[in-house]
Amino acid sequence: MKFLDEAKIYLESGSGGNGCMSFRREKNVPRGGPNGGNGGKGGDVIFEVAGAMNTLIDFRYQQHFKAKNGQGGMGDNRSGSGGDDYIIRVPVGTQILDEDKESVLADFTQDGLRIIFLKGGDGGFGNAHYKSSTNQAPRKTTSGWPGQETEIWLRLKLIADAGLVGLPNAGKSTFLAACSNAKPKIADYPFTTLHPNLGVVKAGEVDFVIADIPGLIEGAHEGIGLGDRFLGHVERTSVLLHLIDGTEDDIIKSYKTIRHELKEYGCGLTEKQEIIALNKSDALGPELAEDQARTLEKAIGKKVYTISAVSGEGVQEILYALADKVRHRELA
View 1 (cartoon, rainbow, N blue to C red):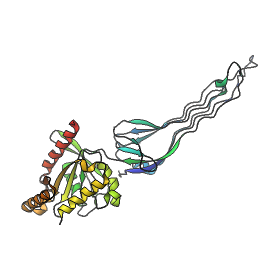
View 2 (cartoon, rainbow, N blue to C red):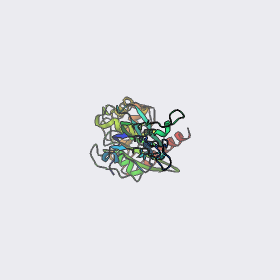
View 3 (tube, rainbow, N blue to C red):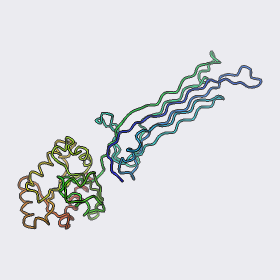
View 4 (tube, one colour):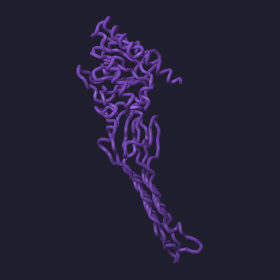
């Protein structure tokens, strides 16, 4: 299944049915009173969170959603039936944005959540509604109220406990594949990952979800390389695992580049707990890997782990460190 995290759709709730003009016409009732029924209410547009979904791909093939109109009123005081609602199912983590893509109208963070987004129009009144002691044969009816129309954007922000960040080719997808059953595309060139991936990881008694986003580049917070959309997928995480390619010429610059992009993007990403790991220690050798880690620790003042996602060296230690951060966040 292809991954899609943004889609524009068009919504319209149902219009109410018209009221009916009718009078009793029965044998032996020469002057029957009014008996026109009211129109039915138009259908609502409803959003419902479906936990089994993890992409917005369905909205690539259908963008227009319209609820049914209410039925018109009928004689013999029969009201029209209401129009059917239109239920739109979205994944957990979906946001509804206004047409300007700035204002958040709804945020679905729980499975099973359901909201009425557009209400259908009310039905009109039949002439029986207007009968009174002074007007026993009214010829007044009202039309049903029109439904509502709008254009909105859907944006999916994955719900994960931990997020993987780093420059392209830092080994994030290899790490995810090594510690979970996720099957991301892996190759020895940058930008292999083109969309976010999720993996469920077990460390001791703790199960948690890791989100791997495509590698970030300088200017990602401004949308270069679609970085601003990718960063949205780690907004909800408890902790970030910052992977750095240990074979890079300047590992300090690599670290600072990602931290700068997180800071410029905002949304509290720099305030999140961070675990830093120097990857590809198998290519460096034990001594050089430790030297690189000490150099980075001295420059940034934070603990740096050394791992090899290919051989598995240090991976379990990282997973337990992540699990500890996730568990403490849940208890807080």
